[in-house]
Length: 155
Image (cartoon, rainbow, N blue to C red; front, side):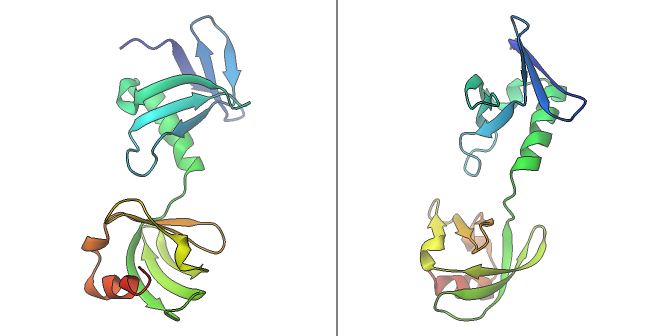
């Protein structure tokens, strides 16, 4: 597939898109359509003023060097730690403190309300902490027994 643009970094580290007409768009932002359920599909390249410049059905449609630039940019913008284990909860009523283990290390979060646990599918959950960080449970069925038991008290 031939792309109608090229991507590069500016000396200040911003993403620069040059379209087929040679127009330069500095500060381009990649935005995933479905960042959790389909992270490799559906990606929009948006100008700094919020207008879509290009739509990509898949990251695989990009050459490796340009795909790497987009993935670096997404890694800087997206921060969703994945919960691997629930260690302890302070209370089964909210607000409660949760000690958890994530793919990025041990964390204590405050769950303000049971409404802060959002089902994305039968087994996938997104949990919002009181400080606005979102945590993902990709598949609650693969959590250990203790974690599933603690989590079930809030679902």
